[in-house]
Length: 129
Image (cartoon, rainbow, N blue to C red; front, side):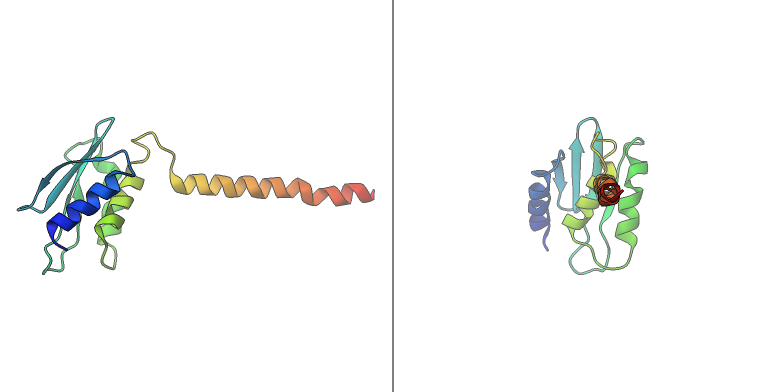
C-alpha cells in the first residue's frame, strides 16, 4: 500500500477517535497523531517491498509507557494492517484519554448479567416452600 493510501486509512480512523492526524512525512513514511489532553504518538510505516512491521513511538515520556501493549502486538506473529495497529494504540491510550477500557466494560456487563440471573434462579425454590 502506498503512503497516501495509508494516510487515507489514518484519516478515516481519526474520524472515529479523539485523535487527529497532525503531520505526515512521506519520505520517512511517518504519521503523527495528537489528542487532548496532550496524548501524542507517531507511526512509521513499512515500505512495500520489505518485511518490516509498523513501528509506534511517542516523544512524550507520559505517553510512552502506554504504548507497550501496541508495541507487543506489532512484534507478535503475523502481518498487521495500519488500522489494526491504530486500534491497538487507541486501546492502549484509553486510560490517558479518560475513557473506560473496552474489555473491562464487557466483563462488567457480563458479571452484572450473571449476578442478576442468580436471584431469579432462586425464586421457584422460594415459591415451593
